Amino acid sequence: MKSLISSRRVALPVFLSLFLLGCFATSAQWMAYVMVDPAALNEVLTDGNGDTVHLSEQDDGLHLTTYDADGVIVLETVVDLAVTDIQQAVDLPNQQLLLVGATLADSWLVDSNSHQINPFDVVALGMGMGDRPIAGVSTVLGGPLAVFGSYEDLGWVLLIDFAAGSSQLVNLTAQAVNAVFGYEGLMLEAVTDLGREVISYDAALSEVGRFVVTSSNEELIGDSNGRPVLFNKSNHNVRTMDVAGVEQWAFENSELETVDGKSVGPDGSVVLWGDNAKLSLLLGVVFDNAHVLRIDAEGVLAYHYLGGGDMVNIAYSNVKQFDNGLVQISFQGWTGEVGGLLLGSSLGTPFNVTKRVYHDFITAGGTKTRWMLEPKRLETYSQCGSLCVSIVSSTEGHCKNLDVFNIDSKRLISVSQVCGMKDENDVSQPDVVKVVRY
Image (tube, rainbow, N blue to C red):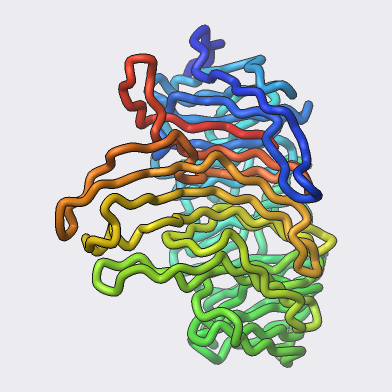
């Protein structure tokens, strides 16, 4: 593996002033084009100076590109390396990024300060942990990473503290570990001889309680102030238990039929998000908003937030809960006369589709306190009969959000796919992303 400073600049910054429209809409500080395959690895984070760092996979290897406060490239390192089978990328608290592979031996550690990408050091772990298949990872206890799974019919949890350079294997008797959470202590769902059990530990990793999850539809989704939270996959209800399995409160969800994601925040509140939009050749188009439900730590619905307007093909790329109950959610969707695109009827001759990416900040009371819109993508189609459509015109815009990094409760970095870009010869450029700092 070699590392070098690249002499080829792949990004062209686009400078925009920072302003507030009313109290809410925030424009970008800067945007920068990058010629890279949007389907490849694209992650953003910050370094120790607070500058933006973009990790991208390109033909000549992995690029680490640092932008200063004005969006100017101040350092770019190319590592002659190909990474494969990356399951997810996890932000670490010391300006590092973990690229999680099938095992820790297949994982990579990215350091935004030193501009280095190194194989994960499994030798330092000992205990033969490098070859164990990883079922999942999660950040716990205010910083350490919990890596977990099943190995030779034994469940395992390894806590890795990157700041301290230490690790600890949690001792338990189980066949598998399905999920791990915890802010002040540790909470996990494990498969044991009794079935699926929720096991709780204090900060010293001493067991403080356990109970069997009796319903096959329920799963552990988080830790609400030291209490396990269960989500019912069938009816989308939520329950909070004590560590012995006694129900503390139950929320009957009559608000949202389709739940795409859920999380429990550091303040103990539960957030559910999803929508009922449909994009089907047989059933046609059903528009909907992006929905966010926040249930407070006592089981009371704090708000039902609607974002983005009537859309279809809605996707959620980032949800972050803060200590004060603030929620930041990033999502995208299509608006316009998309019915013509699907059904081939005379309703769309021609017809327009607008693709938009949204970043909303929602207070604990449900008020949108800040939001960002990325440049919209407008596509105009012609039509020649059933299912026969062709694009006749378009505008350059962001058609898919790839990653979001929350700098704090007011600022973020985003990287999105750019559609409709053409070069000086009017030739389409399909492999373009744009790094945006708000």
